[in-house]
Amino acid sequence: MPALAAISKIDFPYKVEQQKVKEGARKLFVPSFPQVERMMSVFDNTEIKTRNMCKPLDYYTTLHSFEDQNAEYIRLSLEYSIKAIEECISSAQMNKDEITDLIFVSTTGLSTPSLDALIINKMRLNQDINIMAVFGLGCAGGVAGYSKANVLAIANSDAVVLFVAVELCSLTFLRNDFSKSNFIGSSLFADGIAACIITGDNHTVKTKNAFTFLATQSKLYYDSLDVMGWEFLNSGFKVLFSSDIPTIIAQNINTDVTSFLEKHNLKISDIRNFIFHPGGKKVLTAYEEALQVDGDFLKNTREVMNDNGNMSSTTVLYVLERFFSEGFENGYGLMGSMGPGFSCEMVLLQMKNK
Image (cartoon, rainbow, N blue to C red; front, side):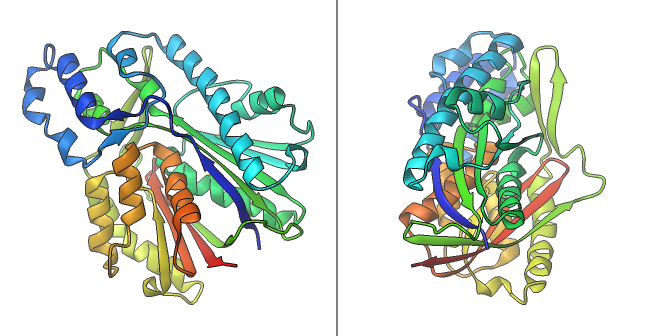
C-alpha cells in the first residue's frame, strides 16, 4: 500500500500573538460596529495563542482590492509552496524528476493557469507530470487531497505523488465588512502551506516512520449547503459559516467514524492516533464528547490550533506533520476533517516505527 515518504510545513515569518490580532480587530470594527465590543472575548475563547500569518499585521488594517489580494495570494502561494516542496523532496531523499503526479488543493484564492502549473514551470519539474488542481473543499481539503494522492499511488505502484495544500485565509479578509461572520472569522483563521510525498509500492520509504494508507471515505450531508462556504462579492471572498457546525459534528461524527471503521473490522478503541482538523474550540469539544476516547486524544490537534489558528485545509496536515516528526503510538491512525457541503472526509492509516 502507498506510504508517506515526507511531509513539510511552512511557518511564516509574520506569526503574531492572538492578543495583538484582537486589539487590531477592536480598532477596525468598533467605530462601525460598536456592539462588537461585548463580543471581543471570542478571541480569548478560541484558546488560540498565535496565528500563522503570511503578511505583517499592519497589512490587514488598510483597504486592498480583490485584485491586489489575489495577486498576493498567487505570489506567496508560489514562493512558499516551492519552499515546502524543496524541503519535502530533500527529506524524502528523492530527486524532483522522480515526481509523477502533483495534486494542488486550495480554497482561498484563484489562479488560471492553476498553481500546480506555475509550480511545475518555476521548478522545472518533469513536463509529463499528471496534475490535479482542486478548489472549494475548504477545511475538508487536507484529508481529501491526502486521500486522492494515495489513490493515485495505488493505481500506479511506480508513482511518486506530490500533494501541496495552500490556504492563505488572511488574504480573504474584507477590511470594510463589519458583519458578525467577518468578525468571528478574524478571530480564527490563519495561513498555512504543507507538502507531502506519497509513494507507490515499488518505492522504499527511507524514513524511520511508516505511515501506510489503508482506506478512505467521503460523505456529503444533504440539505446543509449553507453551513459553510464563501459568498463571492465584488470585493472578494466573504466567509459564511453557521453556529450549528459543532452541533452537526456532535450528531454525526460517532456514527460516521464507527460505520467507516466497521467496514474494516475495527472499533474506535482500536485507533491509537487521531489526526483531526480542529475547526475551533467548540468543534474539538464536539469531537471529544461524541467519540468518548480515553485520554487527551486530540492533544496534537489542539496544540496545532493553539500555535497557528485555523488554517483551513492545511491544518490537518500540520497535525499529521507533528505526529510524523514528534512521535506517535504504533497502530492505527484516523485522519478526519469536515468542510463545505457540509462534508466529512476520513482516511485510515497504519502507523509504525520501523
